[in-house]
Length: 228
Image 1 (tube, rainbow, N blue to C red):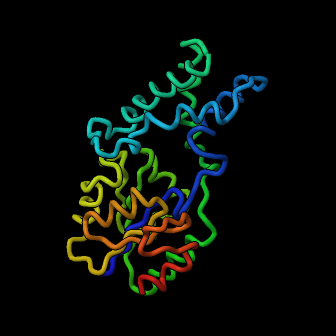
Image 2: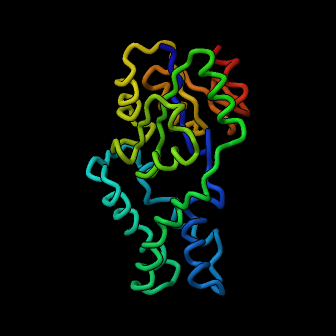
């Protein structure tokens, strides 16, 4: 079996409307459209507090969706309080981040994603997903039509391990012990490329160039030639 291990966010798809900071600001703008909080103000509080920002620390105790979001909600509360809102209002805002971030209408695939996946499938490759994402990622993947394409999905929120932690990669490899060759494909040099290298998997960096990446593809259309 020939195996390709894919990252999602920034590689195959993205959230239209922005990242976590944009989601926190979106909540604010709905509640207080005349406020003077800017995106850069919110970004001060999204540079820390997320599980993938401390990937050396497993979080097996947060493997259930409500527990995972409850931990983040505490961080969101502190962020809103840091932006000057009283605790009671900050709590209300924090509770709205989850549905705001998950809104199905926000999630998109890059235009080269499905065509590339289909082309590689036709060449005999099996696809697995290894993503640092929210507990509801499978629902997002289903909405985007990805579920029939992927033989296996490993999501950090379910596993309790974030890339580049070796155990994140180990869980994918355990599902395909005989796979050879195998490649990792992702847009994050540290999490995807270095993480894969550390466990002996060659990796292709996509979309975001890094001078130390042995393989780089500006678009996914270049991936078949590299793995071929």
